[in-house]
Amino acid sequence: SFATIRNNVFARNAVYFAPDGVAEAAAGAIWMREGASQIWNNDFVGNEVRAEVARSGMFAHLFLDAAAIDLRGNIFVDGIGAVGVRVPIPPSGSHAIAYTDTWSFDGDVFSEGAVLGPGVMDSDPRFLDPASDDYRLAGGSPCRDSGDPDPVHADPDGSRNDLGAFGGPQGEWI
Image 1 (cartoon, rainbow, N blue to C red):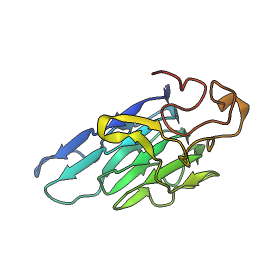
Image 2 (cartoon, rainbow, N blue to C red):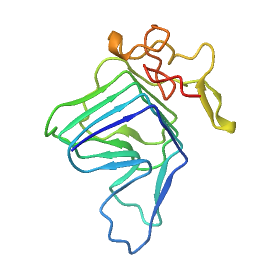
Image 3 (cartoon, rainbow, N blue to C red):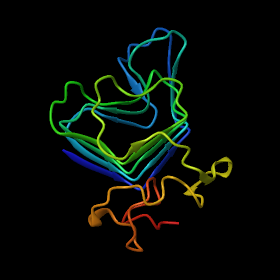
């Protein structure tokens, strides 16, 4: 199976482990066990996994165990969990994590051994008004024109891809 997840906002989703729960792992926004995925130009903000007893397998935003993973153009902010994004290590197929912003994490953003490609940064994305759920980029955001330079990923105005849910060829959806 193949999934394309593009131009979405995943904000304040939560999973809570019960003290006697049997789940091996959980993710606040997306859980994918098989197949291949393209996860492009999304905002992941304030997603969380909590447990009364600390345990492994708590991933704030994504749990990916797919044969091929292509993460690019995403913004990950304020995740609560042992790790923000879990990718298979060692890679079971082709994996790309590129042109992505991470900001304000207490723990690790990516699982141990994740291979980061070009354009991965750790900067305040400067959302327009996150308190009102407006995750468009404000003027002067370091995420503007910081996405994949390949023209296939260009913004609708032809400029280089902005990171986040409002960037890329399908980014004008408000």
